[in-house]
Image 1 (cartoon, rainbow, N blue to C red):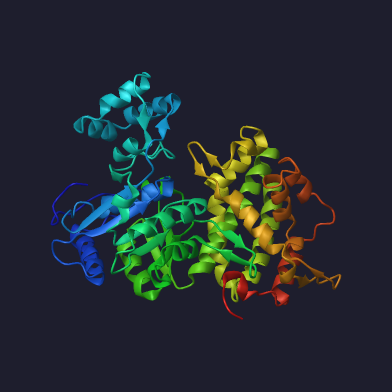
Image 2 (image 1 turned 90 degrees about the vertical axis):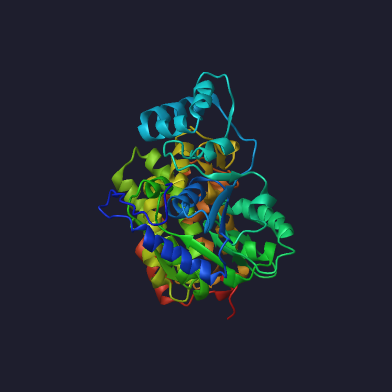
Length: 465
């Protein structure tokens, strides 16, 4: 992590790949610095806003790759101050520290070990921001990161940033970036923003449409759309930091997406680029909806492979139907959407949340921000998609009854999740009733309907007819 710019890194990764030499890493950094107009002595300033699992891992990956070029780049991360760590978490963290010799030695060298001993004994209160400075994300205690430069004052963190990485939940993006906009009023040039957030909101007036985090950022700050990008993919934050092979797409304007894809690419983390920003962003939110239901089904059927496959057939057919409403060429989204859905169902926090609800270990009254996991973004996404697809102005012709219906009427799983999670009309067990409804169409029929009817609604993504 600390070294000279002419050294060569020989870290062997679990997938058998070897990290590039520092020379090629420095070349990538120099190329991006040149593109952003940086001169000698003026470091490229990269700031993460939000310190959840993915936001923290993203900052740590950049720090590991580029942090030792201190005169050329500064990497820091902002998180709110004041969040205390309970004793149970402190005890678990102490076990993690002592199970990792490299982490233990690092903390001793930094004279930071003693505070974890005191917290384990209950003699000291730890705070999330000081943990992050030592390389521990409060939402991902079992995966130690590299030490990070942590700033708790938002103005100090972002006022001179060249690249801002949005790691906030979609539900918090607006309020934070509205505050950030006050600190950018005097700027001559606007930063580049990379959003990692997977969530959506529904805007019903003047016409129904989906609002995504990048659009929220544009509205809140006035940063041009050309400078705002989305990065997402089928990945789990802790596994990426542990060098499991993964890939992602960075979507947005060609001016920035191609050089940033190159800058972010690592041997174990392949980054492709794509121009279709909003659609990929919406798909990242859509899969969270159905992941919650998948977790419920898994818990309620004792992990029955048959029941889970029945659910998967229905939820994927609904997602395919919805993509035909949103995209002119929905087949181009099938691979990325299914891959992201698959990994979320296997190990994502939304599926975990569904399982815990079904088992009674969590309740809806606890809210959708869960200790140790962060924000469960699928809950707000259920509300957004249901409200949007319930609008009479979006009515489509029922293929059998030849009557106009709202699109949501062809999405029984989405309807049931709304009744369970949002209006709380039914308990989680009702998800099984929806699957066993004898009147439910064959999932294949729903896909056939989507493929044979002109359902595309460009206005849903704010596009013109």
